[in-house]
Length: 310
Length: 264
Image (cartoon, helix red, strand yellow):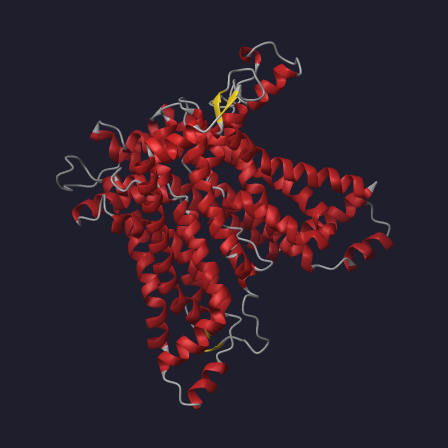
């Protein structure tokens, strides 16, 4: 599921290393316990308390009774549906574009093995950059008075900034998608490369001797090889773009907002009555992401059982 | 032909990665830059003078605050993560799959949802608007990351060396300090780097729990963005990125050929 394992497996490689019998319930609990407790209390507690707050009846002074009023308010709000559709559209588009470009990049880069370290180094840079910074840079590049607009004037493509297409704070979320694609391509590419590097060329050569064309070799050999990593990476990217705040806050339009921005807007509203609705929206975001994970895992496992080469 | 294609792709990759930085750096060194000129009319240090002069105190304070939060988060994640990673990597026991799921959720569910829920509780406990509160909320997703890294590290660690040290009379503490920690040090550094970078780039959870009182660099940068001063926003963005790069370079030798993929 997580990429980190594949990369850190060889940090302290020892051929004699292997999984051993547990030294007993007590000592493993002592070792894992603190970490598990922190996560269960802070994460589980955070979600549970959020759920209680979004189900609590006002006045906020005390929780008198549980009610679905806040969830009903959120779900029946036309703004919610607009935000949800926009969020699904932006997350799916960003993930799809980033995945497509990453596959192409990985296929080209895998032949550059001797330069792998350089590529590797270059790819760490976008991974290190906070989302906030790339959002600021995208404003400077894509806004009507940004770098690309200036370039377009220089080359005589447009006459004034008014003629430059709206790419940030726009209806189609172009700026948001560009920022996410820039940020996520290195992640997906490295996930694919990690697999491709360790699969030999033998299968592809077999394919070639069997007169499989480039497309057939890609479709029936490469794609099945990379699809578990690619799928996991896409899921992580989708979940992230579905729930992240910074980029849509800076690059999004004021209406409709992406769900996380809408949730925070309600949460921080001066009208305290809006706060439980903000929290309810947060719970809905978490719910959609958890359902997406469970669903995709179940689908993958079902497909595997039916023998589909995923 | 093939090498031409490769060169085109390498150039495209490098340009795409470098362009945002080039634009930020150019803006930060421009005193006057009017539309639609492609280059600043007047270069200068006005923005940098503001960042380290006029607003210097505020920005250095935010830089220190961010650094302390990220270091504390990284330190605690590693301290709690090492024992957990050791148990998960070395031993086979029931419930490992469940633990894996429990640790995966905070990595994928956005911090926003958790921070909004925790806030009310933190207010009651006096943790809201405090340094400790912000570190705790960062730990929620930094700790699982470092446990996953250390899980991988310890699944390739051979504890037979510890048995040898013990047979030579080393005490438990000596075994940890002289055998386990040196052998797993690169992995521990990578886990710390993950936590540091993750905490460093957090904005919303810091804002919700810190309530504007714990002013880390991203909180300040958001406030400055509103002022519409592009050169200053560019300069602060650079100030925000550089420590992350330094952390990356510093730990590059521990990373070896591996990447920090997975950092959000």
